[in-house]
Every structure is written in C-alpha cells, then in structure tokens.
Image: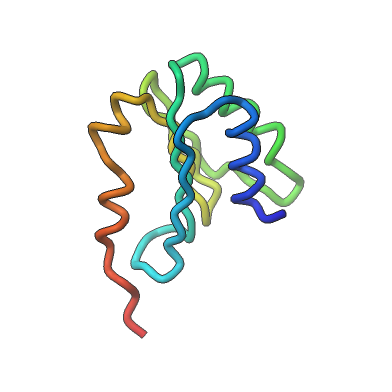
Length: 107
C-alpha cells in the first residue's frame, strides 16, 4: 500500500468527506500529490490530524510542517500535501480547480 492509499484509508475510516487525491507529478508544482478532504468541524480536523500522525507516520515519515486553524489544516509531508478543510473553505477556495489549471512540466 502506498502512502496516499494509507492517508485516504485513515481519512475515510475517520469520516472525512469528499476525499480526493490529485497526482501532480507531471505538473509544475511543489509536491507530487495533494490530498484534499472535507472535515465536519474544527474538532474533527484536529482529530484527523492526530490520527494521521499516529497511523501514517513511520520511522521514515516526517511531518515537515503542519499549519492549522479552525477551517483549514495543511500537512506537509515533503512530497505530499494534505489539506483538511471545512466545507465552507473547500467551496470558497476550490483547490481542485486551481490544481487542474497547472501547466505540464516541459520535457
């Protein structure tokens, strides 16, 4: 099981909604993958973050940075960014749309 599958499994088990994995390996972006999930409320986001830290983190896994507030938590794993967003913020910022407009890498 790869890391994105592991992340999705944890989020799904813990009732995150509308989980989406976006493969950006062919795009000009700072990470290879972005995982976006909608949270039920700020306590749910906090809980999801803790589950990710315990269930996904391994000896080789490093949570480079975590930035969190009541509506949006960003987890930087180096080559994967996880966005845990309230429904309101997910609709407002439409990350999927932004990421779909990225240019392909020039070869």
